[in-house]
Structure formats: structure tokens, C-alpha cells
Image 1 (spheres, one colour):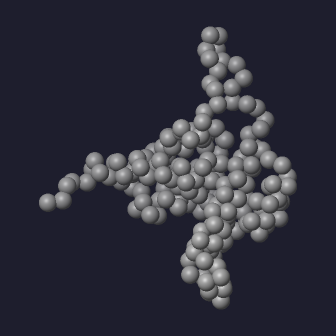
Image 2 (cartoon, rainbow, N blue to C red):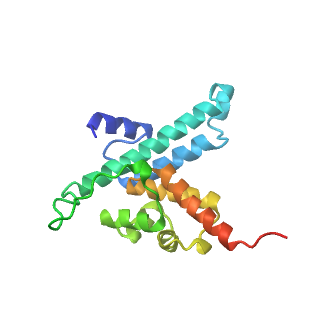
Length: 188
């Protein structure tokens, strides 16, 4: 990603381009909180700052955060491509269309392992419990929080891994709903 584009993303999060990852995450959370609720900071603007504008700003904040994390993760993994040659006669995997990928707990673990990031690192950086992250990757749905809480945690984790946050959350929560429907007895 060109440096000018990256600088614009940092500007959205109100940070300098050399900001530590923890500052990037904290700024993301602060700005998201500011623009998502009834903030007293935005109250004086009244109708000048409509819900539509708030939504657009929130989308820009989430996009900037995800792209910054993806850029940082790609810098860390640029050293070697994953596949250069396969065994004799084996076809080298082609690029996968991200839209066709269905994200699950094991796929998140695979993405994390490919970047050589430990769950402890993720836990410390995102301030999520290690047990929660283990349960997400193992798809221990019975131990996970309600979907409304889980969604934001999945989005944060996906952004940290450089994956599309909305797609990861939607795919994972669809699996969660299917599990819940199977295990919940019908109401009488």
C-alpha cells in the first residue's frame, strides 16, 4: 500500500503513521464509541450531524482500522510467499477469492497460525480473554457470549488478522445460529 494512502488511514484514526499497534487499537475503540452513541461531544451539532453521517464516519473508522492492521500484518509476512513449489505433480494453490471464503473458528486459527501470532499476543493486544479466543477458534459455541457481544469481538479479531471484519462476523454468527437452532429445544 502506498505511504500516502496509509497516512490517510492513520489520519482517520487521528494518529501518526508510526503509532504503536496498541495506540491504533485504542484510537479505533475511542472513535467508534464517540460516533456510535449519543455522545455529548456531538450533541451541540444536533441535526447537522445526521445518523447517516455518523454511520459513514463509523464505516471509515472500521475500514481504516482493518486496512492498517492488514498492512502491518502483510509487512510482517512479506518475507516469503506461502507456496513457491509443490511436490512433484501437485498443483500449486491459486489465489482464493475472499468473497467465497466461509470463515469459521478453525479458519481463524489457520489465519493466525499463518501469521505466526500466538493467542497470547492477540489476547494482550485486543484485551480479550485468552479463554474466549480459544473458544472462538474451537467453536465451543456453548461457552461463547450472546451474539450481540460476540459480533464486536469477532470483528476486532478479524481486523487484527487482516481479514474482512463484517464477513468474518457474519459467517461465524451464521454457524453460531445454526448450532443454537439445533441445540435449543422447541418451545411448547
